[in-house]
Length: 256
Image (cartoon, rainbow, N blue to C red; front, side, top):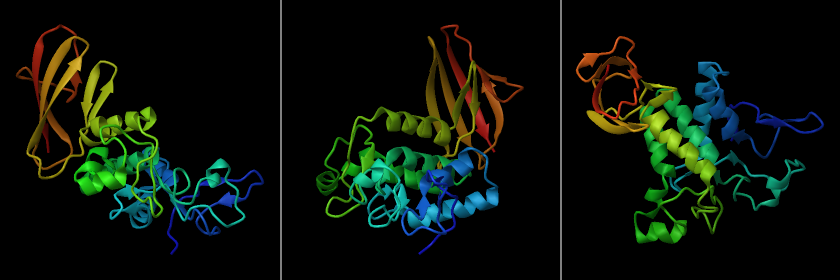
């Protein structure tokens, strides 16, 4: 099964690694997600590319989002050291969590909150240890992020290299920025949440240096910020200007 997607890379001799001409690595999550995150792809083509990711790389039964498919194995393609891994393990077609997080970020950036939260739940390590059976499959710490999750039997679903700060840092940004919509711009906090439609509101206790801002975001059925009220005063720019005055502040943000 072939899918529409952006080209992944070029080999040293100029041969492209792309869906149309290769038996292996026909679709790779990286260029599809970054066509959205970079803003370089047209919305129509990026939607097609991300639809292909959903069909080909999201494995709900295995609770993972794979890096690419099919893995490198028997073809003459030589992408480098990743081919040294067993097909379906680590970078060779398993879940590489950096890329899985970027996939979720891309769906959030497209405004698809249902898909973004569904896929976040797939890769959330805590949810890989919900039952004794889940723990026996995942086998690693559920309270830290794993760099990779195996995608080949008999180890499908097993976590790999844990305590991986790169993936943990990106997951933190996924949660705080892409999903909850908190974007710090020097001394201003901008809001652009991508939250479930069923959430009536949520609250964030945000610390700016030594000052706490208690922020409640109210979901009125839209994704746009309609009003920002700081200590009872509506803010003209609909952003929160942060001041380290060591006082407690209450903020209400309306979405509509």
